[in-house]
Image 1 (tube, rainbow, N blue to C red):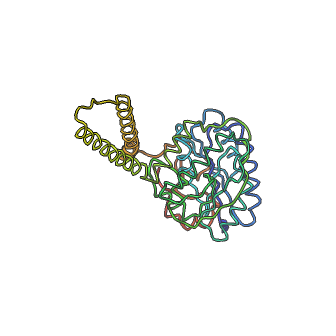
Image 2: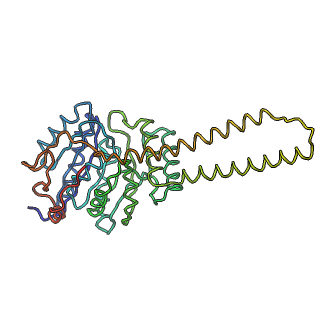
Image 3: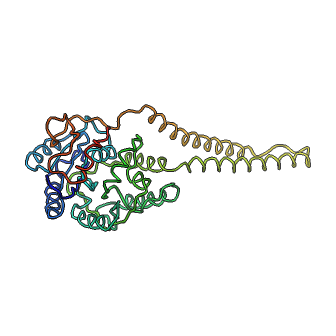
Length: 344
């Protein structure tokens, strides 16, 4: 059994048949570069792919003993795929990296160096973003700054899920089983020392993005609502302001009626506009409240975060997912053998 520490690459993939083979080639080259000091593994999590991705992953795992694969029963989502990878990664450090090659595996050694210097979390900072349209660039910048402004957790700017996590951080994340998952926020909430590594985010190697506008909006809402109750406070403040203004306007009308008793009531247009405005504010407030209640409804059902349909590359005789570490894993995995994998 090797005494070297283990680096785990956690790679969520969804219908990436045109990319996955090239990703493995580059990721394997990085692990080879680190092989003098570290053992390595690549843990792919297939998030219900609808193409030949799983078939190709089987072929890759048959050729490379460092590769393990978890396959979901359906598409559960990117954040759940990351969760499954962290649940079953045995490394002294785990590197979360998407399988579309926008985040280059070649940055991993720099992250490892920062980890060796003492950081428990090393996140990638997107200094440049190739191949993305102006709308995506502007909205991404606004989102990161908005969530930092109203969030209750200090999150780094322009940093996605591409990051290295120390074993202690991974263990902490395994205990957080909330359904509305925003991994980068959970990492910051855990509170371990963090540092950033700048890099240039590449264009997609091939294929089309699976991160649609609808998914982007839902992801942004999850990030905002999971780590702040300020939207509720803002709606309460707006309601108090409108109530105060309405009281003052009503007081003015009563005073004018007393001073000028024969005056006809006028201003139907302004009255209708005020009613519509108030109705809109109420609906917005109820909608925000509904978002929070809906999240609570999903949480109390306590469903598993994901369902595994198949897995390969794990130790034999342990079912679809091995409780024990694979042969040759690093020293932290051996030290924590009694801990077992967190259940989904």
